Image (cartoon, rainbow, N blue to C red; front, side, top):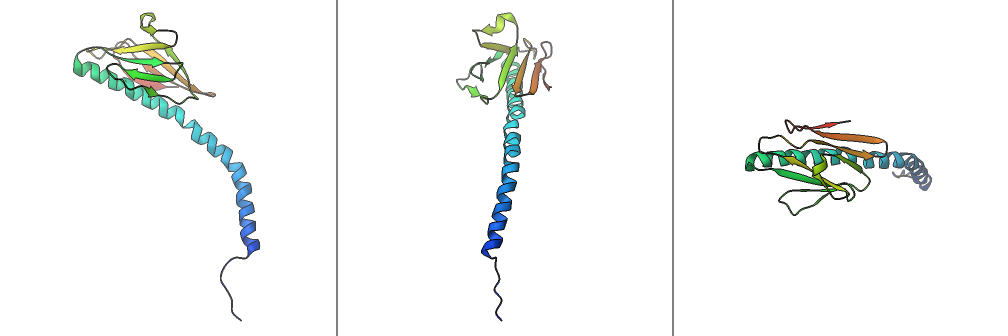
Length: 146
Protein backbone atom coordinates (compact mmCIF):
# COMPACT_ATOMS: atom_id res chain seq x y z
CA UNK A 1 0.00 0.00 0.00
CA UNK A 2 1.34 3.44 -0.96
CA UNK A 3 1.15 6.03 1.87
CA UNK A 4 1.20 9.72 0.88
CA UNK A 5 2.50 12.50 3.10
CA UNK A 6 0.38 15.62 3.63
CA UNK A 7 -2.73 16.90 5.35
CA UNK A 8 -6.34 16.19 4.66
CA UNK A 9 -8.78 18.97 3.88
CA UNK A 10 -10.47 18.39 7.24
CA UNK A 11 -7.18 18.88 9.13
CA UNK A 12 -6.41 22.13 7.29
CA UNK A 13 -9.90 23.50 7.95
CA UNK A 14 -9.66 22.59 11.61
CA UNK A 15 -6.32 24.44 11.99
CA UNK A 16 -7.76 27.49 10.20
CA UNK A 17 -10.82 27.52 12.45
CA UNK A 18 -8.74 27.32 15.63
CA UNK A 19 -6.38 30.05 14.34
CA UNK A 20 -9.33 32.32 13.54
CA UNK A 21 -10.81 31.93 17.01
CA UNK A 22 -7.45 32.68 18.65
CA UNK A 23 -6.94 35.73 16.44
CA UNK A 24 -10.31 37.17 17.52
CA UNK A 25 -9.17 37.11 21.15
CA UNK A 26 -5.53 38.13 20.64
CA UNK A 27 -5.88 40.93 18.04
CA UNK A 28 -7.59 43.54 20.29
CA UNK A 29 -4.92 43.13 22.98
CA UNK A 30 -2.19 43.35 20.37
CA UNK A 31 -3.70 46.58 19.00
CA UNK A 32 -3.91 48.11 22.49
CA UNK A 33 -0.29 47.17 23.14
CA UNK A 34 0.91 48.67 19.87
CA UNK A 35 -1.07 51.92 20.27
CA UNK A 36 0.13 52.23 23.87
CA UNK A 37 3.72 52.40 22.66
CA UNK A 38 3.24 55.87 21.16
CA UNK A 39 3.16 57.57 24.60
CA UNK A 40 6.65 56.51 25.78
CA UNK A 41 8.08 57.05 22.30
CA UNK A 42 6.62 60.57 22.01
CA UNK A 43 7.75 61.45 25.53
CA UNK A 44 11.29 60.29 24.81
CA UNK A 45 11.33 62.14 21.48
CA UNK A 46 10.21 65.41 23.08
CA UNK A 47 12.69 65.06 25.97
CA UNK A 48 15.49 64.46 23.46
CA UNK A 49 14.49 67.60 21.55
CA UNK A 50 14.57 69.60 24.79
CA UNK A 51 18.04 68.27 25.66
CA UNK A 52 19.21 69.08 22.14
CA UNK A 53 17.94 72.66 22.58
CA UNK A 54 19.92 72.98 25.80
CA UNK A 55 23.09 71.73 24.06
CA UNK A 56 22.56 74.17 21.19
CA UNK A 57 22.16 77.08 23.61
CA UNK A 58 25.39 76.20 25.41
CA UNK A 59 27.35 75.65 22.17
CA UNK A 60 26.06 78.80 20.45
CA UNK A 61 26.25 80.94 23.61
CA UNK A 62 22.77 82.29 22.96
CA UNK A 63 19.21 81.41 24.01
CA UNK A 64 17.43 78.62 22.16
CA UNK A 65 13.75 77.83 22.45
CA UNK A 66 11.45 74.93 21.82
CA UNK A 67 7.92 76.08 20.96
CA UNK A 68 5.17 73.57 21.73
CA UNK A 69 1.71 73.88 20.16
CA UNK A 70 -0.60 71.80 22.36
CA UNK A 71 -3.58 72.12 20.04
CA UNK A 72 -1.74 70.95 16.92
CA UNK A 73 0.35 68.46 18.95
CA UNK A 74 3.57 69.72 17.40
CA UNK A 75 6.82 71.41 18.36
CA UNK A 76 9.51 73.43 16.65
CA UNK A 77 13.07 74.30 17.59
CA UNK A 78 14.14 77.92 17.21
CA UNK A 79 16.10 78.56 14.04
CA UNK A 80 14.51 75.56 12.34
CA UNK A 81 11.77 75.51 9.73
CA UNK A 82 10.86 71.90 10.51
CA UNK A 83 7.77 71.24 12.62
CA UNK A 84 7.78 67.92 14.47
CA UNK A 85 4.41 66.23 14.80
CA UNK A 86 3.40 64.16 17.84
CA UNK A 87 0.76 61.38 17.66
CA UNK A 88 -2.78 62.74 17.31
CA UNK A 89 -4.15 60.51 20.09
CA UNK A 90 -2.04 62.28 22.74
CA UNK A 91 -3.31 65.09 24.94
CA UNK A 92 -0.70 67.70 25.83
CA UNK A 93 -0.48 70.21 28.64
CA UNK A 94 2.27 72.81 28.96
CA UNK A 95 3.10 74.62 32.17
CA UNK A 96 5.49 77.49 31.54
CA UNK A 97 6.04 81.11 32.54
CA UNK A 98 3.31 83.61 31.70
CA UNK A 99 5.60 85.63 29.44
CA UNK A 100 6.43 82.53 27.41
CA UNK A 101 2.86 81.78 26.30
CA UNK A 102 2.51 82.38 22.58
CA UNK A 103 -1.12 82.59 21.53
CA UNK A 104 -4.00 80.49 22.77
CA UNK A 105 -2.36 77.09 22.38
CA UNK A 106 1.42 77.61 22.19
CA UNK A 107 4.20 78.21 24.64
CA UNK A 108 7.98 78.09 24.73
CA UNK A 109 10.69 76.61 26.87
CA UNK A 110 13.93 78.60 26.66
CA UNK A 111 17.43 77.34 27.32
CA UNK A 112 20.22 79.82 28.01
CA UNK A 113 23.96 79.80 27.30
CA UNK A 114 24.81 78.84 30.91
CA UNK A 115 22.66 75.69 30.65
CA UNK A 116 19.76 77.05 32.71
CA UNK A 117 16.25 77.31 31.33
CA UNK A 118 12.93 79.06 31.73
CA UNK A 119 11.68 75.85 33.34
CA UNK A 120 8.36 74.17 32.97
CA UNK A 121 6.48 70.91 32.75
CA UNK A 122 4.97 69.11 29.78
CA UNK A 123 2.32 66.46 30.42
CA UNK A 124 1.51 63.89 27.76
CA UNK A 125 -1.58 61.74 28.22
CA UNK A 126 -2.97 58.84 26.23
CA UNK A 127 -6.19 57.45 27.62
CA UNK A 128 -5.62 56.78 31.32
CA UNK A 129 -1.81 56.72 30.99
CA UNK A 130 0.25 59.84 31.58
CA UNK A 131 3.91 60.86 31.52
CA UNK A 132 5.50 64.18 32.37
CA UNK A 133 8.65 65.95 31.32
CA UNK A 134 10.07 68.27 33.97
CA UNK A 135 12.48 71.02 32.94
CA UNK A 136 14.44 72.42 35.88
CA UNK A 137 14.80 76.19 35.58
CA UNK A 138 18.11 76.39 37.45
CA UNK A 139 20.05 73.55 35.84
CA UNK A 140 18.06 73.05 32.64
CA UNK A 141 17.94 69.33 33.41
CA UNK A 142 15.21 67.46 31.52
CA UNK A 143 13.64 64.53 33.41
CA UNK A 144 10.86 62.14 32.48
CA UNK A 145 8.48 61.12 35.25
CA UNK A 146 5.03 59.67 35.78
